[in-house]
Length: 304
Image (cartoon, rainbow, N blue to C red; front, side):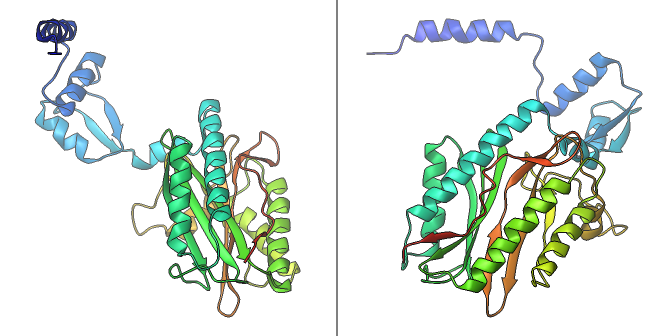
């Protein structure tokens, strides 16, 4: 059957008529038009891309004062709206679902890459997409699944543009007492840290709690650091000059109500291996956190 060209043409003409007078030749021209319409042609405007200011001057907006607001927007994004929290809850749960699917559908002798492939397959079924699913055995992210070996899996996917970030420790076969001990210490330290977090506490203070509990368990180098999660895997401001290092920036971040974050707890030691546990959390109004993923950080043991 031939397409009804006359009908299509009438439809296109109707769409063109609807937007007549409201179109511009480019996104930049449209932005300049909106600024003029808003009456802020002499104002101070912040942009997350500092190049925009010079471009707007080329559009005739000579009196605008441009402010670099890249980190302003990122700082605002650290605290989520209720709608964002719910999307992030879905992203966290779907990512954990995909991670567990990948673990339960791979076995000894398969390529470590097969875990990531399975993670991506399940994410597609859940209506999102994988970003990465990093698997380490003995600190190496290549090769095949080895039996009786502590294994780190750190996975990130996205749903409706928001990230899900969950990590787990797995052994295909038999777990040693040392692996069990360290995983239990990680789980205990996370629970104590989550309960202690409150609005006004710094990221550095929560990391110290984590390290102290791990040291009490006899694990001198154990610990972890938090990072916000949202539209990006690490959804927070970044240093823009030499005046502050990334480590200092992370240490000084302050928890706020409805901030979504993970406490990242990878553990690497030559002779031991590589493990990891991580869940997505949201900060409560007074004290403590709510898990967006399951918070089930028990060691996962699969048949060899």
